Amino acid sequence: MARIKEMLPALALIAVLIAAWWGAVAATHSVIFPTPWDVVTGTLELLENGTLWRHIAASLLRVGAGFGLAVCVAVPLGLWMGWVAGAYRTLNPIFQILRPISPIAWIPIAILWFGVGDASPIYLIFISSVFPMVVQTTAGVHTIEKRYLRAAENFGVSRRTLFRQVVIPAVLPQVIVGMRIGLGVAWLVVVAAEMIALHSGLGYMIMDARNAGNRYDLVIAGMIIIGLIGLSLDSTMRILEGTRWARWRYAH
Image (cartoon, rainbow, N blue to C red; front, top):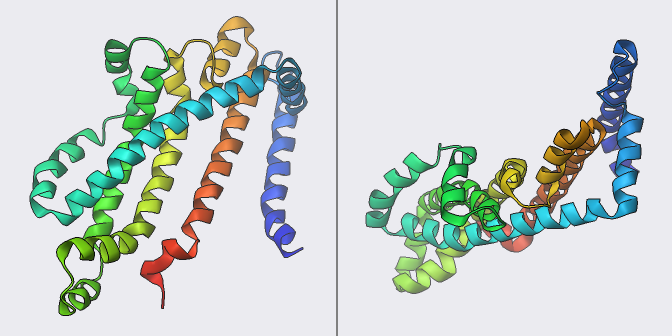
């Protein structure tokens, strides 16, 4: 019951926005922009012919592959840069130069290197999510409280053991925050990334619906589905943030 009460303001706002959307379409007598009911019927059409699940699966597969590769690269690299001062001084300027570049700007490079296919969207998703995780992981190592390190040194702990048993557990909350940011960015660029995909994905579905016959009901449906999946992914990462082993650093 308490959970439902917490959701009531958000649900009420969503209902108001849907009503305003429906009223605006009715008032303007638009023949192109869909009503909420048109979007519902368009979504049901995609569900009935099975194409929606195929597009969702393709997008999730690409985001999963690109994001997974980014985690495998960013977390070890961020730990190394945070722990070794020379690595930080050498690599940080390069990351700070590359980080502000929009993932969309990498599209010509992706096509040149990987051609038109699944590899290009995966690369764009990788490049969009790897930098936030590297920066967040490095910052997490740099902000570890010195008392942890001094206490370990007082007990004669070796540098390797200190890194494994103190640094990594202490930095986990920041790593997960970086993963949450990286996953959000990865899902954010899925539409742009799938503009160069072959024949699948939610981004492709949106562009195809627009180009094939001004099916704006399917365009809006795809946008809403992307938003709902993004909300689900973020909620999953928030649950991971709240686990006990991920909150070691903040334990009292």
